[in-house]
Length: 52
Image (cartoon, rainbow, N blue to C red):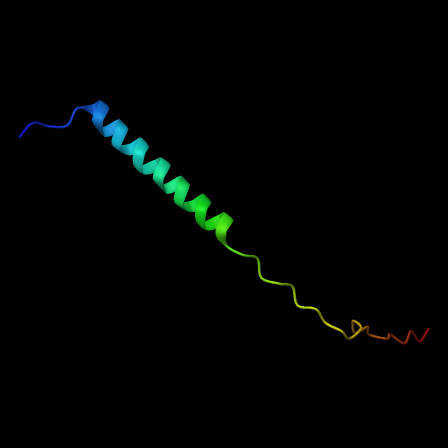
């Protein structure tokens, strides 16, 4: 059985790399962002008593 030439290995590597990049981009752009939680109450502020 003949061995693969280096050019075929390079083509195979490039093909798998491009496929990986396409899948990563596809999963990144198809993920819908989660809605931010909307709190109706005012933010809690801590009152400090400065006793000089």
